[in-house]
Each structure stands twice: as C-alpha cells, then as structure tokens.
Length: 261
Image (cartoon, rainbow, N blue to C red; front, side, top):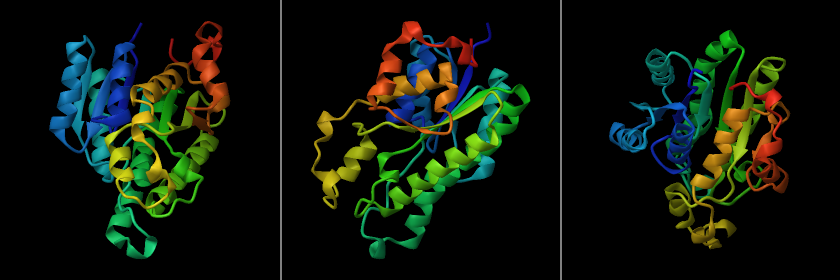
C-alpha cells in the first residue's frame, strides 16, 4: 500500500507539531510547514528518530505563493497529497478593539483565515483530480463567543468556520472531506501567552488543567485517516461526548466511509 501524505501548516509547535508527529507515527509521510526553518527541522528530526518520514519547509502562510510552493514541494517529494491540516494561527493583537493597531488586526485575519484559504486553494485541484482528500481547519470556541479583548481572534476564527462550510458545500458529492475542528482549551504556548493578559473571563482559567496538545492531535489524525462523511462541513468539537465515543469505539467504526485504506 502507498503511504498517505499529509501537510501540517503551523506544524512546528503546539497542536500542529503534535499532529505531525501523530500522523507520522501512523505511517503518514508528513510535510511540516511553519515560518522558521529551524523549528520545522527540530520536529522533522524527532519524527525521523522514531522511524517516520518528514519534510520540513519554511513558509509564511499569509503569502499565497509560498503556500502553493510548499504544497508543490510536498507532492514533488512524496508523490501525492492526502491530508491538509491548517493549524497555523496567531491571537495577537489582544486588547480592546479601539486599541488594536490596524496592521496587527489585519495580520491576525491574514494568518487565521487567508492562510487557510491559500492552503485549501492550492490543495483542492490535487484532491479533485484524485477525488479524495481531507482538510482540517483548526477552529475555536472563540468563533462562537464574544470575548473582550480577543476581538481579532474571535472574528478570524468565525471567518474560518464559514470557510469550512463553503468549502464543504463546494465539494459536496465528491470524496473530499472538510472539517472544522475545535480542540477546546489546550496547554500550548499560544494559550499560555494569551492567558497572561487578564482581559476576560478566560484569563481566570488554569492552563495546567487543560488537555496536552497530543490529545486533540490524536483526534485530528482520526479525522484524516477515517474521513467520516457525516462530519464534513461541520464543527467537530473535541470535547463533545458523542465525538469522544466515536474515538473510543474503534472496533465499530464504519470503514466504508474511509478514503484512505
């Protein structure tokens, strides 16, 4: 069997790095994409040390030509593409809207929405040609809750929710699956940095009690490998008991819906 190939944008740290490592552990060849080459190299070296295959690539997701080049490099290297995980994200600027610099506000939207758009746009012709592929957009509960001081992030993630819905509508009837994935509260550097700003009710939470990034990463891998049709186009909430039951009930999964065997 041909090993599947995935590309993880924002794959150098946090949930993205955990997802890249988990995909590789399942036999997927992985391209790790982030802004800094050295950080991508570090994750790739860890994967290689465990017997996996990884391609580290430096890329600014806000630049469409760089994203397209990264996907081309992955396909040139591995011969195919099966999974795209859009994990790249920023939370800055944090502050009341009247205090947010316009450039920082625009950058937040460029990374969180437009970066995912660039990746989807570059991958879709490949997926359409093979009538198969999975896109996972990392969403957030912030898309559905107005949080003071997190305006840019809330707006960006809300836009990403609609991007997922539109993409799913446009590929309906094909073998392509598109998921929005809400990991819940996860103990990552991004989260810890955001909570240092005592600006809303979320800041009172203790990040030590949050899930480690490996927990939602395992669920993202499940979506990639099993691509359930009934969840495509929706927001998959990692902490939802019904979804957790599907993750736990591995022996009864409906493999007829899988696009990777």
